Length: 250
Length: 243
Image (cartoon, rainbow over all chains, first blue to last red; front, side, top):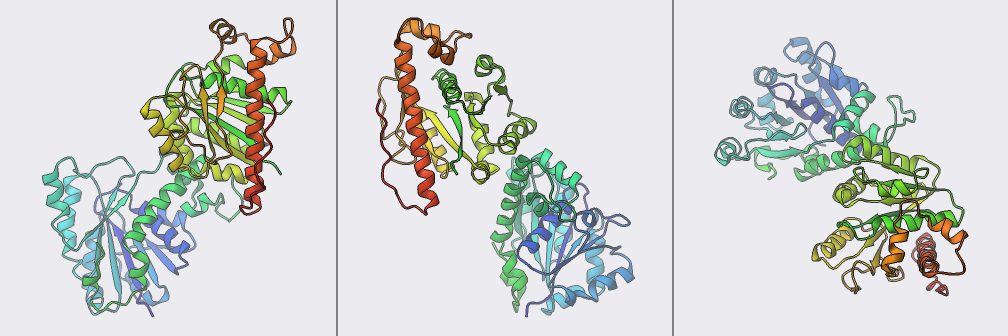
């Protein structure tokens, strides 16, 4: 049987699209029929919970009772996605180390994936080095989210290489831009991307979303999932490797 | 049930006769008393809409709102025979959006068959654009159009139709004086045909030839749909109408 998988989606910088990426992951696992639960650390009101109310709980990952809610019940689902609020990535990773979770990952009891969402600032890129010290036994993904037309210093190869080429085991993921109106329409609808594409409302009722906007979302979601397929996400969560570090997909 | 046609009159270049062909198609629908609709995607110079202010809407698809106005409408309404005059300025964006949102498949599901009428010319870029579009939209029928006023010769190898039976449509050259008459903003093929001045004229023959090509094309498209519905079993070539 596959080990429980924990996927932490986070960044210390705000507004880089953490929840958007978490939503695409939940949709991906729904489509692949993988039992998944999610924790939203944006207490008291979670954005992720607004889109995926059935599988999401709002928690404070720095509080011990909520840590117990998450980590003492990991075997209840094959995949647990934790959407970490801006500024809480480093404290969360420290807490994971302090409670012995990272040691358990090292021993092969859990599969741990970190989706580090990057912003287009040096401060954001500096997070990579701070974060990487906690990812020795994790699969570390550097997520370039282009949803707001940002760049990641590709125009300055020296700076780009300085941040993106240093970590040999980190794998880059690219999230393409989604049409602004389509994004906003999904926001208004407050449904998962998949539900929007299927033209359904929050309760599964028929909706009347624009075909054009649904088409844009379908195309975009397909591209995002193609990235997840490229990194063999489904295989990673299903696998029970002896040494996860060696299994990093390139 | 036969699909309702949606014709996209396209070329990456200006002044090759797109609006003329769009006008002829709309007049053809009208002559057959079909419900019809047109879209003019030349917001800066909506000549097509100028000819048919009651039937043709001008839409700017440069932004998402305009794209919704066009594509959502095309599949929302009860299907009617529709012509889109695709201005060369919107050429790339139109086909990019059409492919991205999966329009043709959804339209077909709703009883609308999208067909691209691509006006050829001798420019190598046009040949490349045709080939690339066909690759990008493999499930959309492409029919080449040879406007003899634009180029004298036509190379079948440069503009092969999606299926061998979709023969190219030729628009014969009109004499300059007659062309001047046809291009007048107030000129209507339909009215002219109904009220001939005194017996058949050059325009009558010209329109009859083109309308026959349209009938031929629609017959062949219909046969293609029937063949597809039967799982690819060919019923043989359709009869060629007498010209």
